[in-house]
Image 1 (cartoon, rainbow over the protein chains, first blue to last red):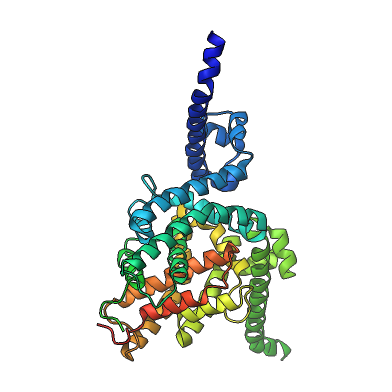
Image 2: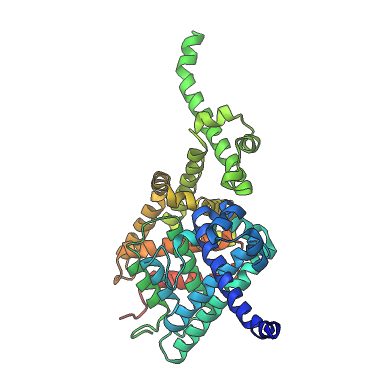
Length: 206
Length: 206
């Protein structure tokens, strides 16, 4: 009887448990990468930061690279949610107002870790492709949002939506780099106003 | 007589020689940083790449950090020359058309090294301030160019020149990051057209 009870409830309990465990690993290792960088986030430090053994960590994620990419995917997902409601420029405004991360946006410390792996991304095509796959949902959300804006007549219609998407993503890359390098960003609000305005339909435009 | 001859010519000969030696060190170490990254560019590798002893290298540059910053200054100077004639968007176009560097622009491999030191920049205020000082001439050249454009009526006049300067620099930072990560940039030309157009006076604008 007890055994059958276990059989019945085990899967659900176990899946909740797995999800919580996965979240615990992601949150701890994000803080660890942010603090020590990709190379500096050793297995021992990941254990400390997550409060779990390496066995438990690598039960959920194949290796450090997979863990890192899961975090990138996690970011992209959270930012895509903001994009769907408020657009990519709002993501940038959130990054400015909350450089240490929190709510919907990742912190500059963690984002900086992404820059540190740039050599790896440039020289390792498979890593780059896995990374690009993880970020694809942010691009998709941006493109969808711009298409909706276009349909409601808020977007300029002399430039292709794909170009506008690449443009906004390029500015985001610049902002991430700027913040990750610790440069002052208190004068960035009017810059983002300009970015926002440059994708909108020109008032009284030609 | 010979001694007095030496005395007379020594300074000039010596200064030419020093300049050539300095250039040899900069060129060799740029290639070395580009290939191995900041951390990977060990003193031994810097010796190999420059063909000079550590004694000779560090006679010209106090330490690896100073050498690295001299390279950043060298970049900023060359880019500032392009900016003065053709503007910062042209620097971006040159980066796109010549991602391995050469003429007037640094290559993506070397630029990527700048991303790798982002943690150091963020956490070490003195290093960041030395870096910012080295890049100041690029900002100054951009601002000057925009002011000239403004005077000749080519620039939009509803946004402050400082905001436009920060905007263009932000896009450059994004492009550097994009190229350094090895992401495809063959669709970037229309994006740069949009950037260029967004700082210009609107045709028939309000």
